[in-house]
Amino acid sequence: MARRAAAIPGQAAPRAKSRRAAPVEGGSSRATDSELAPAKPKRASRRTTPSPETLTELGLERLIGLVLDEVGRNTAFKKLVTAAVASLQGSDAVAALIDRRLTALERAGGFIDWQKRRAFGADLDAMVTTVVNELAPLDARGALDRLIRFLAGAGGVLGRTDDSTGRIQGIYERAAAAAATLILDLTDADATAVALSLVKRLETDPHGLVERLLNDLSARLPLAALGPLGAALAEATPPAPTGTGRDRDWIAEAERGRLLRMRQALADRAGDVDAFIALETERDPKRPDQVLIAERLLAAGREREALKWIRRSQKRVFTVTSECPETARMTVSDSERVRIALEIRIQEAVGNTEAAQDLRWQEFVDYLNRDMLRAYLAKLPDFEDDAALERAFGAVEANDDPYAALDFYTHWPAPARAARLVAAHPDLWEGFRYEFLVAAAEVLEQAHPREATILYRHVLDDILSAGRSNAYGHAARYLATLDHLACRLEPGAIEPAPEEYRAGLRRQHGRKAAFWSQVRG
Image (cartoon, rainbow, N blue to C red; front, side, top):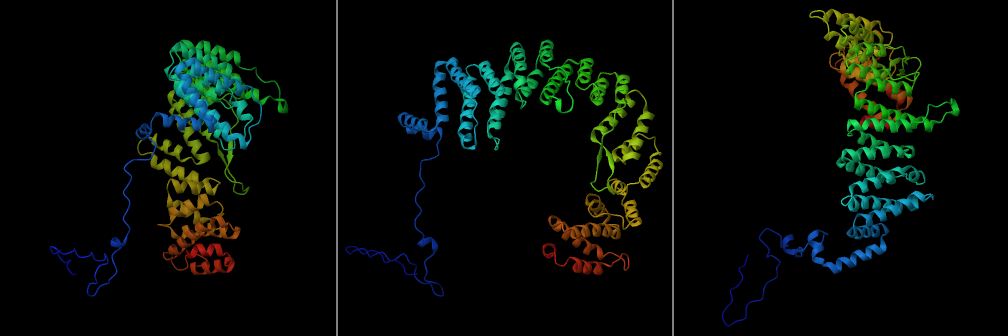
């Protein structure tokens, strides 16, 4: 590249050459991007994001002007500013503002539709913020009282509001959380007084906000306060319902149930098992919760009484595991499983280890409960578990529900026995019971490809025959798995052969383009 000529004394300096680079032999004469790019403007030295530092530099008069402008435009913001100014006069001035708003809210009866919801929510939110930010630092007890009053009116407000977005409910949840925080700092005397005042609010508490606060509060009350609170709850408890069928007062029954549960919580706090039992019997004389009662008796060391309660005759609750009549089976409900497990614990507590083992075994035989079998085997003396496991496998084979047996073998796991079961009944399996078949097929893939193939084919055929388009992605994966399994099958191991099976799918379901596009993908 040519050098720039040096300036000669007495002569004008040579004119600057163009910034375009001179051509280089074998190269391009185009200037580089960096040479042609416009110079970047210098970054502003001052930040524009509002912060304590940047706002301070605006000056007081400028900030006052901005605040007053916003006050004129934004009603909720105006109320926040008004409350902040009132706080300079003390807690009474702030409380007066809040009380006026609460009174207006309690007297209002108009419906708040979706067009008014946003402004209404902003107003409620501003009131909660005023209580928390302005009143609470000056008078925590006064702030708590007003939050409780606000929560007590939730039913009336939510009942006349279109709250499809849940925003208004969220404001009440926020108020409940703020109240729960304030109760932590109450003295024992104040906590007792507040708890007693909450009882009167329960009648108008359809959303359970006051009830939740009372439960939180009662958990930290001194034991001496439990008696007065329990008496107040008992006085507020409605009498037992007398109506039946359509004549029943469901709202009163729900309120009665809530109050009885709260009284039971107090009985638990006091360690009074007999009071808990009496309340549970009052709650449902015909069907008291025997598990709840037996648990407390066991914890209190009254094992014999617990055993009597847990063995009380009650109708078992069952669950249907399939909508198909041919394959539907009844399984014991979760609550019944809890009851059986508790009875086992009680039997062991009273020293009836043999009875506990009998319960474990019967629960396994009836419902092929793997956990019960494991617990049963763990309690056996050394060297007896192998024979017991063989006996258990015999019980599985004798079970009249092949899906339950397959599920047991899949998750025990015992893949060889699962394969034997599938091979013994190759045409039995229904593809729509995929929750059993796919899980078993995945276990069988490695060592038993033929049996895995049988199960995958049943599921795939069901998806395509029923046109379950939402499951075509799964079906495509099952077909890919079948292709991999085909390489490991002995010739003649399964009918039809893999290539014939795939051709049959093409013939029967060739027009299901959505499926075949998934296969190609």
